[in-house]
Length: 264
Image 1: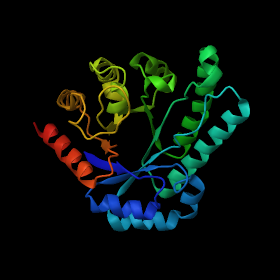
Image 2: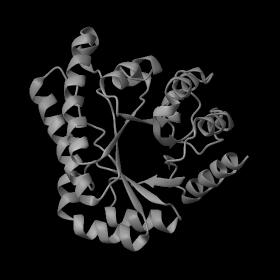
Image 3: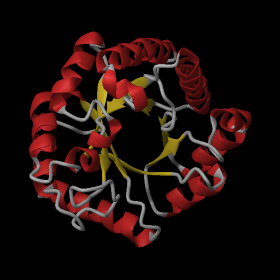
Image 4: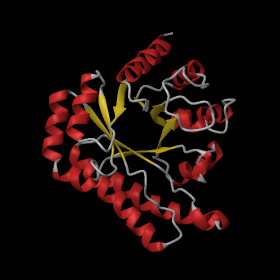
């Protein structure tokens, strides 16, 4: 098992590498978003970033851009979004990443009125992104989203993705699964239906109303159940703590709490 933390993309990447290494994590999950972690600047600094990771003993997972629109109804916006993802994949490969986290296509604006069309465009975009990831020997792990995303937040929706892409892996986000389903039912369905697909996990807590990114135990997610269920699937991969309180102790304590539950 490896444990990681995510950079804050408004901070310099090299400084974030030092911060995460100093906290004793095994890898950096690099959020590839501007202003400081756009693919162009990452690629330009690839030699320095690779050396910093090596010196700090950190492995690397890349999180492809969050704020793009690969299912947009406007073709030019959709094309630009896919290009951003493709350039980010190339930068991830140049940096030596092992796997990449990606979001499925969000349904926004008028897409809510023509949902089937928006989903079709999103799948077309994913075809190109996942094909390039395979060419670059990167493992793509698609992430479950939340109701406000408009799509791909229910476990049943992922059956389409895994049928279309047999080698696709999953990022299970505990916080996303809990929003609007504070009884834990959605999280249970993801683990029950696709536990064998999970190759990466995002850990954060919330009260079921918003993506609060709290430390485990500060919201209402049943993490002891989640840990027990992941262990039953044979999961032994990578766990990123998406705890964004600004307090470094919360990140360290989150990891320690998770490790304690895993040892039970």
